[in-house]
Length: 317
Length: 320
Image (cartoon, rainbow over the protein chains, first blue to last red):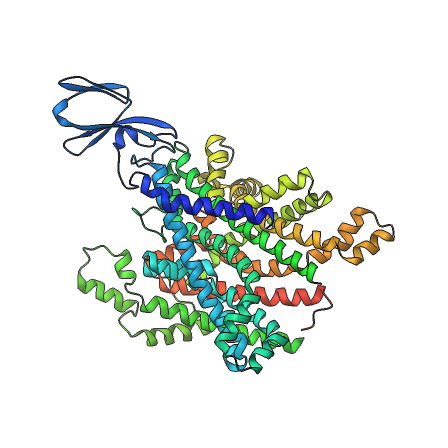
């Protein structure tokens, strides 16, 4: 395994485990903590959260409990609250700060990452299923079926994709599932073209002819002979495409056409933070860096796989 | 080759028609229309109906489609519902703005990308190469909106040396001649860099790989054996071959000059095609959406055709 492939896979492993397991331990991404006192706290801030019996939460810099009342220092001012009105007091460290509404940015980044990565991965899966089946079909059957599929691919590739996505997203106001389908609809053509090319080059090889000769069904040939031989280029293409899909989802959500608030995603977190860019850089920086790291990991995996196939090509020659 | 071009052009016309038809169908069949997106809730139902009648929205969509197709074949793209102005004149206004921004971005991306790749290739796997590899990977992976926002933060707010948005300063509309040009350049700087940065990453990453491959080829060894200088080997022998696929890339980027970078236009409030389409999609302004889609699709088809022709022209091995 090349170092790049290993590094890419490690980053992916960390990202996926953080976003899958992380949200169970993180506070709720929609919980609003005392907007007035904890709005847009910088990373590393520590506050004592005073939960009052009427349901409100105060984020205090300092809390001293006495017998009959609790003294809190909030935004530099002292306040006294009768003990009877205080439910519980809890210290919290806002590792990545809070946003303008007083929501925990780390919690939102973890939950948002789960949404962004899930959409990217599912869209990739849908892209691969559609692209591989149509590519196999076109390459294997040839003739009219092949022409029809490939002309459809040409036509769709000629659509300016960003407009197409814009149109679909604006017109259909996508739910998360629709967003996955919309993204897949814009990405499967490349996979179909790649798989068709692979099938065409493998089709006339002896082992395929032999398999046909002993009467193997087309499905069996596709699954046991064609796909395993085309795996590396497909995986390489898929890795790059995952990066693209994550970027596209982020761009759509940034434009307000993808994941809709209050559900967080890395793209809409950047959009929500952009107005406070000068005052609270972490709101755009944190989700932005998360996207960059994801796409870097995707590119490293793709690079590693292409190194791998090149080495194999040289040793086989 | 002439026949080939003719056939490709015919196929292109079919593709544009297909795309237009699919788009029209999608927009027409989706729930909701412009009267619901832009009208106030207070507008009485009768007025809303009259409005829909004026736009022809009360007719079945095949009839609307036929009318739209007939008119556009005569070169009339209709009147925008949101702006109440002919679509062709609206597009004529935003297209040059987009083309200006996108072409400068494209030039920066190519020149920068080639320069970076050539620097890296001087000592492959050396310190400079490694640092630049990391840098280009990061640039490639950065979402354009993030780059745009960072540029805004550092060079428009922290260090206010560039204007944050629009094509001209408020007073700039009054300038003429040289001051107007300088004002325009001043406004262009940040959006062009935003487009260029991510592009440089992609071009340099691609070109570095193919230059490394070319250096293993025998013609490079032969050139070295003849006593060519290293500079000549790279510039006259390896680069032209490594850059061949770049021609396809440039051809593929031609549509970019028309559709532009939507995200960058939105971030920097650049009055271009992307902005116009973004607003048209939100407002369900069907004539403007259709006009923009057709123009952009034509650009894609022409771009691909030009790329293939150019490829055949510079690479004699390719026959059309």
